[in-house]
Image (cartoon, rainbow, N blue to C red; front, side, top):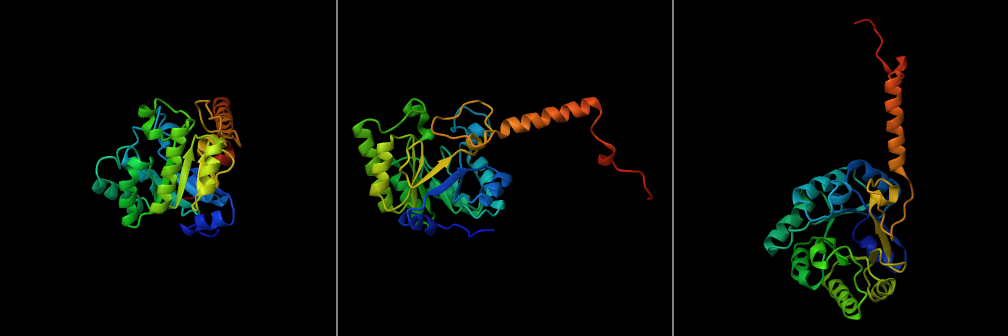
Length: 272
C-alpha cells in the first residue's frame, strides 16, 4: 500500500511540476488495480452511462446509480483520491438540493470530493458546496451533460470569444477554491495558457500536452470498449476485450468437447 492521496497532494504536485495521473473507474476490482498502478485520482464518472450501461450519452445516469458505483470504488480503499461525478439534474434545480446530493457522495459514497460541469452559471452551486466543506473538482470546455445545448460532442474554445470565456471561468473557479479543473476537448494552446495562469492544477482530456495532469476513461485505456470507437485523444494500452472474448471462446470449446470440467475440477467421493 502506498500513501493515500489527499486534497493537498494536487497543489504540491503542481508546485513540483509533477504530472498528475487520473482515470475513471466504476467498480471494486478496477479501483484496486488503479490504486496498485499508482493512479493519483480516480473519478467515478457519469461516463458509466456510456461505457457500462451502453447508452448514447451521460444524460440518463441517476444520482442513485452514481452513489452506488462510488461506494463500490471506495470499498476498495484505494490510495488514489476519489471524486464522485455529480450527474445531470443533481445540481441544476436548487442550491439546497445540490448540497444534499453532494453530501450523499461524501456520506454514502465515501468520496473525498465531487465534480460538476460548467463555468459561470455554476458558480453559485460551486460556492454552496465549498461553503459546507465539500472539495470541488471543476470541469470546463466540452461538458458532456450539455450535449443537447452544444449540439454534440464538439471541440470547445476554438473561437477567441469562447476561449476567453473558458479562461475567465477557470481563473474565477480557482479564486473560489476548487482544488483542480478538468479541461476537456479544447485546443492545446488554450490548455497551455490556462494551465500556466493557474496555481491549481489542470487535468486534461483532449486538452493537449501542457496540462498538469491527464485523465482518460478506463475502458478506452485497457481496450474494453465494445463499440469500436476510441476518441482521437485517447491511447489504448491493452486489448482486454479481445483477451476476454478469446478466453470465453476457449471455454465454450472445452465445454462442447467435454474437456471441462476435468477430473481435477470435480469433487471426489469420500468418507462422510
